[in-house]
Length: 400
Image (tube, rainbow, N blue to C red):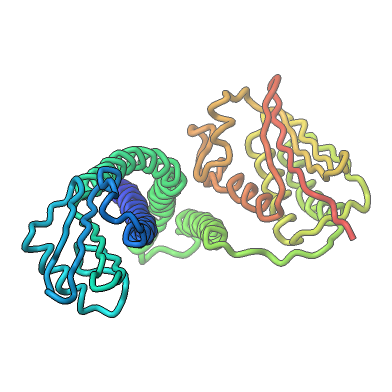
């Protein structure tokens, strides 16, 4: 599909440029040729206006025929033909007879011949220009135009190919991510569904037993159902963001917002044996969506809870640094490679594949955190040094 799209872009670009070029050349040629014809008419008028008519040197006027027509005898009494003229005597005689009957003193005698005439006594002086005398020059002009068109189109075809690759790359990346996202989502949903189906089959196979004796399978089914519900909610959130939905933004006290999440997570972290310290600068105000910012902080704390090692030494800070607001969450962790750091915000990516799904999550949390940060026109980064990872969210403070 991407290759077809790239080919269409190249074809459209080249064809459109060729059309524009051809139309431009036609306009330029037509305008220039009309101006040249006007100059030729002026030259013919100048010739017939000369007093020393018979003494003119036609070697200076390529394609010119001078004719003197006797009105009494109705015949050509004198004629002088210049270089390059391709009109035969019969053709000249026919054109002259046609011009004599015209009221206009200059113009086109035919598609091939321009003329100018002037009466002098019983004679009519007629100067003719044979357009075919310059046909070689016109053909060379057309040939050069075609060569320029072919060469220019070839060069532009190469340029279009390069530009098309650049233009299509984001689409190709998005398409590949979309396909990968569907594959990963299908895989993630398939696992809990398989467990639920297996549990229900076991329960159905022991229909004569009590509910209490089946609680192991019932609890397992409920756990997998909750996990699947969380996964579906995360997928819906990301799908809404992919469709370009925007959250309602308003001024809010970020300090109070973060404190609410800290209080709800403090007990959980304590139960898991994690050391947790936080420092929140009071009255930090940003323009944002309260629900999404709470979700952002909750994701970072959940991530620290799941992936920190030992006591964790989890730290959270909210403060104004220079012109920006920073939310910083850090914790002890296993050392990460540059490649692992680069993929932390990818959907369904988990650093430790050996962890169970129940403890490691579905790999969408940090992707959602990045989406929320981007929605708030901020930036989120991850940095790992000396066995400690730090997530930094940068937002703009609210300005009245």
